[in-house]
Length: 217
Image (cartoon, rainbow, N blue to C red; front, top):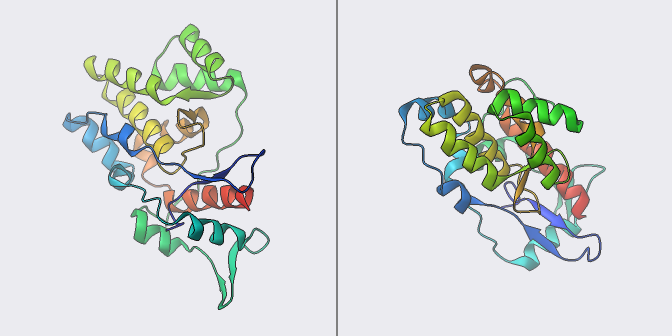
């Protein structure tokens, strides 16, 4: 179950864990246009649309986190060591694990705003206002939904698909404890939507999850 759970802990209270998934936000998006369906499907991320999280037994989740060792990226159990493999990710999330690995580099605010202007076709003022409200290189999930609706009505399918895909990543594999924001850096994977399907999204998801497990433990 930890293969697709995002685990978080607060600095003030490290024993408290939070599992984050925002599937209901994904369900609010409309994707009826065949043009958008095809663009999303080509990225290999369609399987995330149906993902859901069952919080399960909090004691079990805590027990796994307590036994996670970042030095070996594995759980140290009485029966031996166990890790989360790429095959696990592929089996549970149906994400591609073979392909190019996309490395997301840190963004400066100016770079984040430029990316929003170029890829989501918003004005510089709108990009500046949104990142200022989020206090960093982030945008709100609700803001992305608004951008999506506007581009959908204008029949700007590629831009609408980018907004949809960034929202999808922010709700599922790159969900964070804010429950409202997603980092702009992930938009970098959608400059060329024909190229986005060549990425090993499963490998990226596993690396991201390892980072949060390291923080939680």
